[in-house]
Image 1: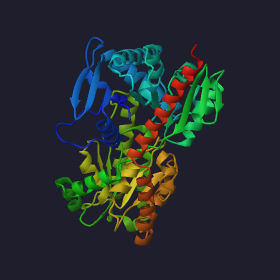
Image 2: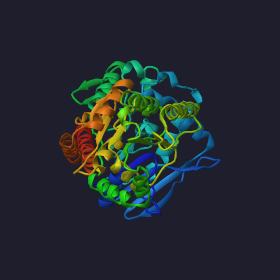
Image 3: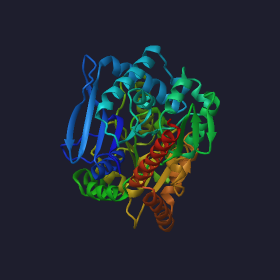
Length: 469
């Protein structure tokens, strides 16, 4: 395979402490180490003036090239257009949209600068793979910078249908810029349908032919590539984390009570207020579980500079306080809510200890925590996954207890159902979900996307030769 070049907002730099990387980083780094690779993106640093020359680190056959942002770019490109416009738009939260012309200009400027900085680093036979909503127009800017290698794009979050997309000013131009890629990938067939429908309605001159969009002589493949996890790696980390000091402390602290767990970044898309209310409702309707269960919610803070996240934090704190006020006893707290993070192996160990995994986002492209929960569970006595129907993972993990995250009573009933589910049924459900995870793991995801990108690039080069004078 050609060298793989990945572009993302944050780069998974080698961790000098030895902490395991996340599932996406694990899969991409594995492919890059096999074939040689370059990972390009934001360094996480801020400097006063824009920088064009990336800082490069080499390790295990992979190059990591990073650029800093200026404070203005961070405020307008990252916090502004990317996370105050595109993020709520793609998660169907139109009431939270904040559009400013200056933010949009900064978004386009950062994409242009990153493209011009990346272009000189590319080799003739590279495969270029752009990731996520921060870089929707990067393909167009790379083409303008003279890049002719195959360029693919993968959106990790949902894509909106036209009635929602039209809330974005200049949505047609942004959509057209995505058609400068050779392959555009999404998590689910529904996202593919949303994109194709948007192209049909919002891009005059676009023609939809099967899973391709044709526009002004370009032919773009649009396809679902559901991201997976490294099942064996998660299983190993879960075993390690369960035996580690934090896993042992958690297990001891439960004093025989059953654990319910949620692991989410603190974000309004994750449905934490509704989840907490559902847990409280379960304790109200099923008093037999009081004193016998504990909900551990790990929710590391994110984007604290965005006002909506402060509002969310205050709401969750109030609901947590209400649950304790109503149900806590002098020797039992029903809820443990933490906004700090833990090493990945520790989290996998926590997941392995839980009788119930609560993954109930209001909208999610895939949600790998749902898959990690299944892989972390002991096969002889697995727990039960309660999963939102609005997460992409619900299309694959059909043996979870599928819930509507807006239905608090329905979620409460599902938690109680999971608590009382017989061992034989839990084993059967878990076995089928584990088989599904193994058949579509993260390595399959990387291979499927890069294979499609190679084919598309070869076809484009063939078509170009055919029409050359």
